[in-house]
Length: 529
Image 1: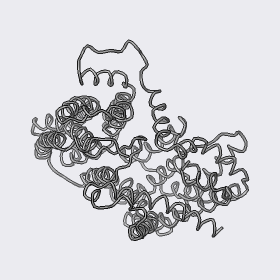
Image 2: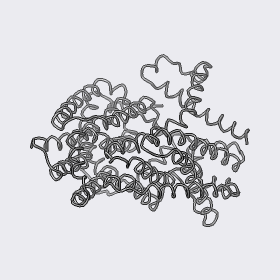
Image 3: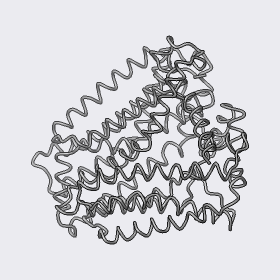
Image 4: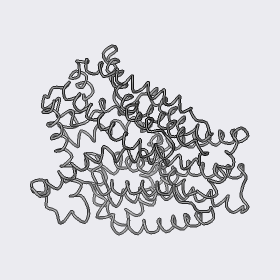
């Protein structure tokens, strides 16, 4: 067991170290300084190993800390809960989010390259490798949730013994789900893949998330006693599930099926990955030969792209707009029946409009739009020199920006109009101008994210020829975007001030982005090796 764990660490660390060195080599300021033989330099390898070791230690706690901070603490601060309700709300959210997480991630059924290397290529004992790594992941869950449970649970009124129960509950759910999936495979040969949850799983996840956040918004909480009872049951069932996990014998056969698509991607590299992604994306691209355009030049290219990719570009935007409409109707219908909801929403809209920057961060379709552009268009056209001329790049950038703004305008305008209506229905404001500013500022948030992600795409072009996202700088900037958006939750500004600032910032950002793209994109907008 210890030998298997050591070999697993070595294999995973090698892959991680090479990824770290590659990311460092791709950074603009270091690209010319660091030699191509960086993978052979002992000093760099030691440095990358230190980073890898630190990350292994930090990952056990940092991810859990951010989870508690953002997914639970941030929402509890938003709801302005009544005195004495903090403990109930904390356990309520944690319970439902853990149930959703059970369906999304058990650590056992995630088809990763290190599993393919270890069990298929290197021939390691599949059962021993799986059990060692799975229970190691469970130990990390216990450690991370134990620390964070006390850090976040005690201040809101949870008893110490309730905080101590949290890690065993979360770990128990993962054990229970793993045992159920193994039994399902044993009896019905149903192969679970965590990257491809079925429709029923997504429906259950949506219901759990809605219960976690929707009920507290209506000041409805599962009683603490009931939450504790569910947590005890989860921990106990998880403990009983260990026997099923240990008794299962067909791990090698199961992983052969789970990792069936991995050999092509590993052995053939980027070309195979590109082929698989393109085949998947083709399912959502219209094959209607009657689709054409009367326009010319880049406008012709863009119109054909948009018409053929309607499902990819517009389907999620329409669904988001529909969900916004349902939430708006639910809030309006709840006003007469939920005391304090009207006043709470009015206060939120009047003083905490910056919070919706974080909401629009999740609703924007910028990353999906740019990924579709690369896989189904730029991946081929970037091989032509004319496609990278400054004037052509700026023109196509502006055309594409217009299209992505249209896509993001549907959920953005829907949210802006809905918030303005909620402001009016919840008591209104003394300044009628604020209704218009509320609408326009939310629309500007959507425009900003449209410009932001398209600009990053042109300035950093993160994809390689195999359509894999390889730019460490791109990942760092997108992560920073997330952190700034999340920080806006804590900002409190009146509608008038924030609306004017948001509109001015959006206009300035659009101008600066166009200048940067014109000057630098001819050098940066290229295929990565």
